[in-house]
Image (cartoon, rainbow, N blue to C red; front, side, top):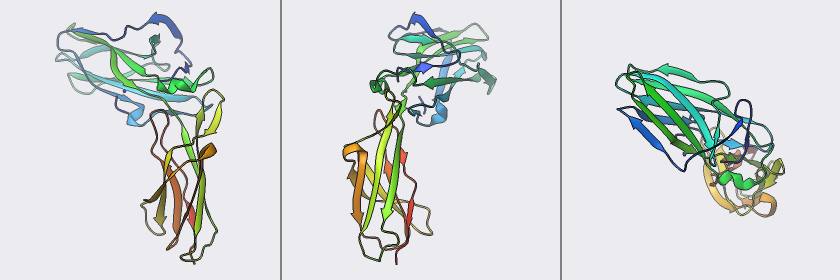
Length: 251
């Protein structure tokens, strides 16, 4: 995601520091600027209930004299974390512009509340140019870590008669960081989609609201062979999700 948490434990070299980050700070001298910040390659960042997640942060800076050095940190809810757990890789893109990339690993093992998905991560950057100019900020970029969602889909009966009712069921669930498992996600709008055999594009047929425990159920009238699936567009705290397509033969 291009630049924008959770109270998760960071593993490896990301030991929690006792230092507190000011609400917001930026200062500099000369023409040094940050031109781009990319988190997780531009993709959404979501964490399941158990497995750690490693993501990259890339910061691009510019100065007329070129960039001499750059330091990156990730901060969370006012606390400062150390540098990338795998070091920084920096490269000059042009005579005036350089990009530095580091990796951080998030682990939910000590998360005490799912409310942590409402928190924010911040990218802190210190840049020094070859001519002595500099720029420091603790808000080069912000981002969120969402609870990972998943979907299942099952359509039946199989095969089904042409113009006969077909029932499509499934379940929407998301990571419960406190319980370290997946839990049903109810009351959410989920799309039922169909892809005709021999084509490559899914089309939304209807919208259904997930019920108790995240249960999904609806009835449609198929007109030909193809694949049925559920998709979820995500929420502020929860990732997007797609179920695998369930093929139904219509006779």
